[in-house]
Image (tube, rainbow, N blue to C red; front, side):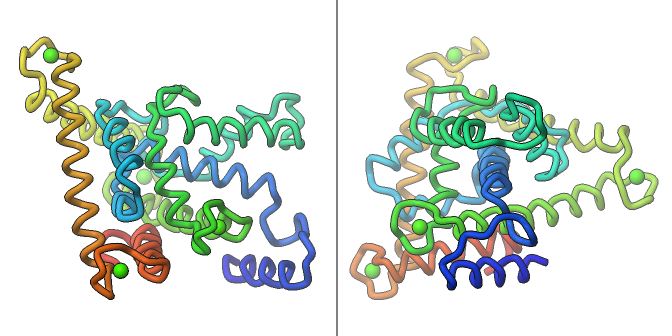
Length: 278
Ligand SMILES: [Ca+2]
Ligand SMILES: [Ca+2]
Ligand SMILES: [Ca+2]
Ligand SMILES: [Ca+2]
């Protein structure tokens, strides 16, 4: 199915036609898929795109470090990766006239919000913790022709990769929490999965607080956050140096286009296949 969709896309692009419906993703599906993929990744720790720091400028890296100096919050999902459910929520949110699909005006609103999310780190769109840099990195990974924006086929590749990842993670969660072994998660089992996720996030919050809440008042004050921020930036710098060293085949100290493509491909493979992919 996935291969068929790509073949059809390549076919339609090769004859210069932009077909809608009938086997390949419509503009609405691509857009909703992209928003859902971006929100899903942004909600998580962002580890999956962390190596994209290799493609960031010093300014971008600092901005990413600033943003990541925010304590994580529990996600709004149920702890089970479900891109389909996420898409339904995105669709419902932007389907202003309630006809079950997104018309041109509604699609523009969603596109604007997605753009605003990347452009304005402090905005709390969608009511979720904002991780614009994670979305920015995700978009960078799938911009395979390096023109600074995502074409329809690059978006499709991004949604396909995130869908594959979600299916893989979902299978892992089911394996772990399917207590009665019937192959799916009922409400109780889903709740257990969500509780485990929330516990993991709380433990991480606690770990950050233990390290940075110097006056132990339970929150990060300005000075404490400043310390966290500069540590995050230093960690990103170290990671960037390691990533560049790994992909700098010609040893000139920077990543040229071919080296960036290899990095993007490695990250994509890891998104699809998991952490042990390489
Ligand atoms: Ca592109
Ligand atoms: Ca079950
Ligand atoms: Ca404090
Ligand atoms: Ca190089």
